[in-house]
Amino acid sequence: MRFPAFDTSRQWWIFYALCALSFVPALRLYYVGEEPIAFITSFEMWHRGEWFTHTIYGLNALHNPLFNWLHVPLASAAGWEHGLAAARFLMAGSSVLTGLVVAWLARELFQDSTFAAFSAVVFLTLGDLFVYRGWLAYADPMFMFYVFSGIASLWVACERRNPWLLVVAAVAVTAGFMLKAITAYTFYGGAGFILLFRKEYRAFLFRPASLLIHALMFAWPVIWFLLVLEGGGQGTRMLGEMLDKWSGKSFGEYLLKLLEYVGHALFNLSPAVALAAYYLWRRRGGALQPETHAAHVHTALAVALLNLMPYWLAPQSQVRYLLPLYPLFGLVIARVIWRAGASAVRTSAAWLAGLLALKLVVVSVAYPIYQA
Image (tube, rainbow, N blue to C red; front, side, top):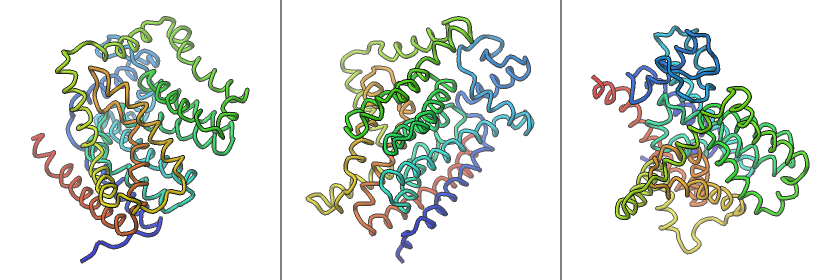
């Protein structure tokens, strides 16, 4: 029995909706890792009525408060006994919304609504995001949403020559900073650097309006640290955390880290990356369909790899910090599979449906048993 063909955008969006609903069973699981921090900091902010200082057990944690601003109203409305589920709902929702941004970017770049829906499914079913990281109440999924929304808006703004989308990009990246870290600007800056190599974008990016929007965006951290918080201690902490990633290891440990990091990243992007690699190998020598938008694929891959390099090369780093790059890798992976033809797309759909079934077993049965 052959797996049914998915050849319309409607079919892929139905599949996407099922994948999105699969996050629901995870909302009821017990606390994992550092998840209690999200609940405690929001509860303290609400209880103290202090909306700018991020505290845990009364001590200033020197973190930005955007997550708490979003979490407190939701947890208050649902009841604080459901505070963890509220935090996970925000993160799972961020993962799902990021998939919609992937589809929007794919539709703008490749002018194919069916491929746009397929790329959203491929992104959302990247193993690490789909089964674990995409619903966990850490800031990473929401940080991914804001940072990638900024990058996608910047790219589409260049395509359309639309300065208002640059405003959207600036707001999104600033939200990423207010949520988690100043690295939101480094991801965005890396994307802007690659886009400057596209001659057709360069004149737009150097327009006075574009420069003004970006100047205001990059000025916000200084305003936040020095004027709103009235001190630079939080900025010093962020800078210190970034520098700590470069603390030394022995040469042998460092080489092992480089290898392990690549393996871990590929595992996190499975099974889609394995399918793409298989079709690239099997259909080498020109068997893939011709790429009519090669510049876009090369740009997406270049942005992802450039932004990956500091995390890969740093002696101390975790693969979860790459979450803002997952949408770009997902887009490139989806494009490779798409060019391999209808049979490859159908086979990939079968694998992703199997992953969906596996996830439901994990979050509904296996994880509750493990936690018990």
